[in-house]
Amino acid sequence: MSRRVRRWWNIVGKLWDAMMDWAEERIPDELSLASDLRTMIEVLDLRAETASYAMAVAGEKRGLLEQAVESYEAWGREAERFLRSGDRQKSERGLMRQLEEKKKIAALTEECRGLQNDAERHVRELRVSQRHTLRNIITQRALSDRWSLFSKGGEYGNIARIARSVSGRIYE
Image 1: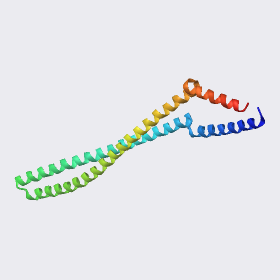
Image 2: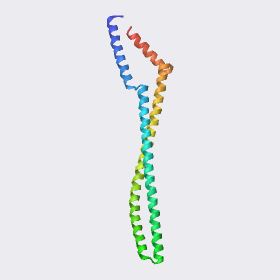
Image 3: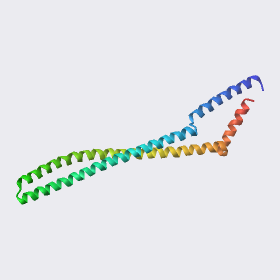
Image 4: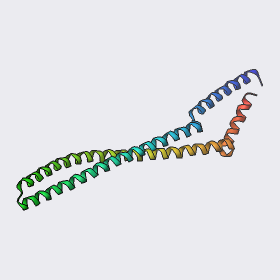
Protein backbone atom coordinates (compact mmCIF):
# COMPACT_ATOMS: atom_id res chain seq x y z
CA MET A 1 0.00 0.00 0.00
CA SER A 2 1.34 3.36 -0.89
CA ARG A 3 2.10 6.00 1.62
CA ARG A 4 -0.66 8.27 0.34
CA VAL A 5 -3.33 5.56 0.69
CA ARG A 6 -2.14 4.71 4.20
CA ARG A 7 -2.31 8.40 5.16
CA TRP A 8 -5.84 8.58 3.70
CA TRP A 9 -6.94 5.54 5.72
CA ASN A 10 -5.43 7.05 8.86
CA ILE A 11 -7.46 10.23 8.33
CA VAL A 12 -10.60 8.17 7.73
CA GLY A 13 -9.84 6.12 10.85
CA LYS A 14 -9.43 9.24 12.97
CA LEU A 15 -12.71 10.61 11.62
CA TRP A 16 -14.35 7.27 12.40
CA ASP A 17 -13.00 7.35 15.96
CA ALA A 18 -14.15 10.95 16.41
CA MET A 19 -17.67 10.07 15.22
CA MET A 20 -17.80 7.01 17.50
CA ASP A 21 -16.59 9.10 20.49
CA TRP A 22 -19.18 11.77 19.71
CA ALA A 23 -21.96 9.15 19.49
CA GLU A 24 -20.77 7.48 22.69
CA GLU A 25 -20.93 10.78 24.57
CA ARG A 26 -24.53 11.27 23.43
CA ILE A 27 -25.66 7.91 24.79
CA PRO A 28 -25.93 7.97 28.58
CA ASP A 29 -24.37 5.06 30.41
CA GLU A 30 -26.41 2.65 32.50
CA LEU A 31 -25.20 4.06 35.82
CA SER A 32 -26.34 7.58 35.04
CA LEU A 33 -29.69 6.26 33.77
CA ALA A 34 -30.18 4.23 36.95
CA SER A 35 -29.22 7.24 39.08
CA ASP A 36 -31.69 9.42 37.16
CA LEU A 37 -34.41 6.82 37.68
CA ARG A 38 -33.69 6.68 41.42
CA THR A 39 -33.99 10.46 41.56
CA MET A 40 -37.27 10.34 39.62
CA ILE A 41 -38.64 7.72 41.99
CA GLU A 42 -37.62 9.82 45.01
CA VAL A 43 -39.38 12.82 43.47
CA LEU A 44 -42.40 10.62 42.82
CA ASP A 45 -42.43 9.56 46.49
CA LEU A 46 -42.23 13.20 47.59
CA ARG A 47 -45.11 14.12 45.28
CA ALA A 48 -47.15 11.25 46.73
CA GLU A 49 -46.45 12.46 50.27
CA THR A 50 -47.38 16.01 49.28
CA ALA A 51 -50.64 14.88 47.69
CA SER A 52 -51.42 12.72 50.72
CA TYR A 53 -50.76 15.60 53.10
CA ALA A 54 -52.86 18.02 51.03
CA MET A 55 -55.72 15.53 51.02
CA ALA A 56 -55.40 15.06 54.79
CA VAL A 57 -55.48 18.81 55.41
CA ALA A 58 -58.54 19.17 53.15
CA GLY A 59 -60.22 16.29 54.99
CA GLU A 60 -59.46 17.87 58.34
CA LYS A 61 -61.02 21.16 57.24
CA ARG A 62 -64.01 19.26 55.88
CA GLY A 63 -64.45 17.73 59.35
CA LEU A 64 -64.36 21.20 60.93
CA LEU A 65 -66.95 22.37 58.41
CA GLU A 66 -69.23 19.45 59.24
CA GLN A 67 -68.87 20.24 62.95
CA ALA A 68 -69.77 23.88 62.28
CA VAL A 69 -72.87 22.80 60.32
CA GLU A 70 -73.93 20.52 63.17
CA SER A 71 -73.36 23.32 65.66
CA TYR A 72 -75.38 25.72 63.47
CA GLU A 73 -78.29 23.30 63.38
CA ALA A 74 -78.01 22.63 67.13
CA TRP A 75 -78.11 26.37 67.94
CA GLY A 76 -81.17 26.71 65.72
CA ARG A 77 -82.94 23.88 67.54
CA GLU A 78 -81.89 25.35 70.90
CA ALA A 79 -83.20 28.81 69.98
CA GLU A 80 -86.47 27.30 68.81
CA ARG A 81 -86.83 25.32 72.04
CA PHE A 82 -86.21 28.43 74.17
CA LEU A 83 -88.70 30.42 72.07
CA ARG A 84 -91.36 27.74 72.61
CA SER A 85 -90.71 27.75 76.34
CA GLY A 86 -91.09 31.54 76.37
CA ASP A 87 -87.47 32.50 77.21
CA ARG A 88 -86.95 35.17 74.57
CA GLN A 89 -83.54 36.30 75.85
CA LYS A 90 -81.97 32.81 75.60
CA SER A 91 -83.64 32.35 72.22
CA GLU A 92 -82.02 35.54 70.90
CA ARG A 93 -78.65 34.43 72.30
CA GLY A 94 -79.08 31.11 70.46
CA LEU A 95 -79.89 32.94 67.23
CA MET A 96 -76.79 35.13 67.66
CA ARG A 97 -74.63 32.02 68.10
CA GLN A 98 -76.32 30.52 65.05
CA LEU A 99 -75.37 33.62 63.00
CA GLU A 100 -71.77 33.32 64.25
CA GLU A 101 -71.73 29.69 63.13
CA LYS A 102 -73.15 30.71 59.74
CA LYS A 103 -70.21 33.12 59.24
CA LYS A 104 -67.82 30.39 60.35
CA ILE A 105 -69.45 27.98 57.86
CA ALA A 106 -69.01 30.49 55.03
CA ALA A 107 -65.31 30.98 55.85
CA LEU A 108 -64.70 27.23 56.24
CA THR A 109 -66.53 26.49 52.99
CA GLU A 110 -64.28 28.87 51.10
CA GLU A 111 -61.18 27.48 52.80
CA CYS A 112 -62.28 23.88 52.09
CA ARG A 113 -62.83 24.71 48.43
CA GLY A 114 -59.29 26.11 48.13
CA LEU A 115 -57.73 23.17 49.98
CA GLN A 116 -59.70 20.67 47.88
CA ASN A 117 -58.52 22.36 44.66
CA ASP A 118 -54.95 22.27 45.98
CA ALA A 119 -55.22 18.57 46.82
CA GLU A 120 -56.67 17.79 43.38
CA ARG A 121 -53.81 19.72 41.73
CA HIS A 122 -51.26 17.70 43.72
CA VAL A 123 -52.95 14.45 42.69
CA ARG A 124 -52.91 15.51 39.01
CA GLU A 125 -49.20 16.38 39.27
CA LEU A 126 -48.56 13.02 40.92
CA ARG A 127 -50.32 11.15 38.10
CA VAL A 128 -48.36 13.05 35.43
CA SER A 129 -45.14 12.33 37.29
CA GLN A 130 -46.08 8.64 37.58
CA ARG A 131 -46.66 8.39 33.83
CA HIS A 132 -43.40 10.21 33.10
CA THR A 133 -41.41 8.01 35.49
CA LEU A 134 -42.98 4.82 34.14
CA ARG A 135 -42.16 5.88 30.58
CA ASN A 136 -38.55 6.56 31.62
CA ILE A 137 -38.28 3.19 33.37
CA ILE A 138 -39.51 1.42 30.25
CA THR A 139 -37.09 3.43 28.09
CA GLN A 140 -34.20 2.69 30.44
CA ARG A 141 -34.96 -1.03 30.38
CA ALA A 142 -35.16 -0.98 26.59
CA LEU A 143 -31.82 0.81 26.40
CA SER A 144 -30.35 -1.61 28.90
CA ASP A 145 -31.61 -4.57 26.86
CA ARG A 146 -30.17 -3.11 23.66
CA TRP A 147 -26.85 -2.47 25.39
CA SER A 148 -26.73 -6.04 26.67
CA LEU A 149 -27.51 -7.33 23.18
CA PHE A 150 -24.83 -5.02 21.80
CA SER A 151 -22.20 -6.23 24.22
CA LYS A 152 -23.15 -9.94 24.22
CA GLY A 153 -23.64 -10.48 20.55
CA GLY A 154 -26.90 -10.83 18.76
CA GLU A 155 -27.96 -8.44 16.04
CA TYR A 156 -26.28 -5.43 17.63
CA GLY A 157 -23.20 -7.39 18.65
CA ASN A 158 -22.53 -8.24 15.01
CA ILE A 159 -22.53 -4.54 14.22
CA ALA A 160 -20.08 -3.93 17.05
CA ARG A 161 -17.76 -6.72 15.82
CA ILE A 162 -17.90 -5.35 12.28
CA ALA A 163 -17.14 -1.84 13.51
CA ARG A 164 -14.18 -3.13 15.56
CA SER A 165 -12.84 -5.15 12.68
CA VAL A 166 -13.18 -2.24 10.27
CA SER A 167 -11.46 0.15 12.65
CA GLY A 168 -8.71 -2.46 13.22
CA ARG A 169 -8.10 -2.74 9.46
CA ILE A 170 -7.95 1.00 9.02
CA TYR A 171 -4.91 1.25 11.25
CA GLU A 172 -3.10 -1.77 9.82
